[in-house]
Length: 502
Image 1 (cartoon, rainbow, N blue to C red):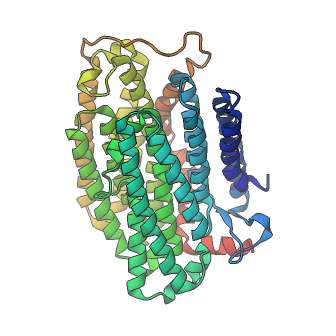
Image 2: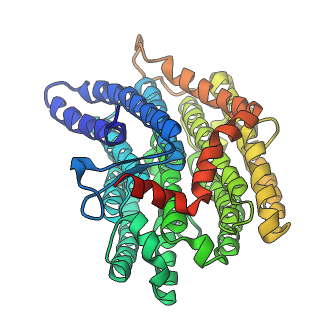
Image 3: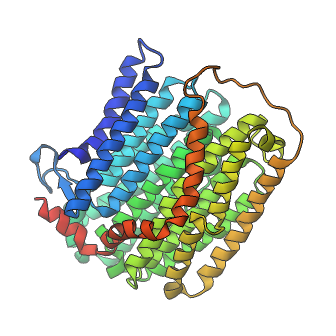
């Protein structure tokens, strides 16, 4: 499949168009089209990953127009990790939604496909113009998914997200204009060749704008205010997609641009300490906000804010140039493990909320008895994300802590330990509430005899089990992520890959 990178974008985009047209005559068409798209898209991503593993990377110029005249899609070992996260998140969302949300409005399925196409476009874009287009497409789809339920809270949360997304887009556009004015090109690899001649002030301003723009997307404190109300309004399924999948791609974008385009490790080595400090702020702030929160969905949202901090610590240490590949591996480990852990928490949490009829922590009374399988999955995923060995979260936190010592000493390690203790407290509060007797089960609105009924529980079970299995297979996971870490640490490799495709 020589066109696999392009197919990874076009398959979900085409599915959104087909689903929109078919929905006029067949109400269930969007569900069916989305499911077919999910598995076909997974095949395209696997094919792309196989090609990259065999060749070390590939470039694809649609229409044969090579940059800087044409656009280019670039897939290397680093980007394929995120493509796999997108594809896995896509399929798990569809399978869980088939079981748990058979009455969803058709727009949800269509918007999901648009979001997946945009996220793949961000992961593969080799020039700033198309990156900007895909980021905006993802923002539009996210607004629709957040506001899709017909009540005022969802509309308000969607509007708040739209405001933040507009500010983020404006910052990114200014950065693009500064880069184009200084270099005369928009292809990321060509900018990397010319960035050394950019005035120092403009260089620092552009790097800051890129970080702030994407920081709004993935919840960098103090730019995180939209996240908790948006996740609460969108519902647990959409939140799992936004937190477990979309957030990771925005982290990917800022790391790709700062490392391979701005070449921050070479031109601004102090960035390692800056990003480490930002990561520590996110860890402490996110966990304290989670400790104070009384709603489960908002609690999980603040937990995501905190775990962005762990990811930043890993990638920030990689910017120091000291054992960059090892630090990058630590960051990638937490990216992958958090995608699994947080998806398991949102999906199992959705079932607990449904069984209790309330999303407040106090309102979860009796949910463990009414849905013991969902509680067991939530319990296992919670242990993993807190960092209890031998679950996956323990190993990724351990690797992140090891990688930051050489950059900032023991201070980040103390922050990681404190964050672990705080998160243990607020997850224990959820366990305690769920295990208490009381409450009454709301009526089950799912259709009896629905063949997809058991698929939701199966999806939750597989994700929860994966949080343990990934930890037990840590050596193999690190081996698989090794090429991706090397691709990130090799600042010249990305440029050479694009040049080789011309």
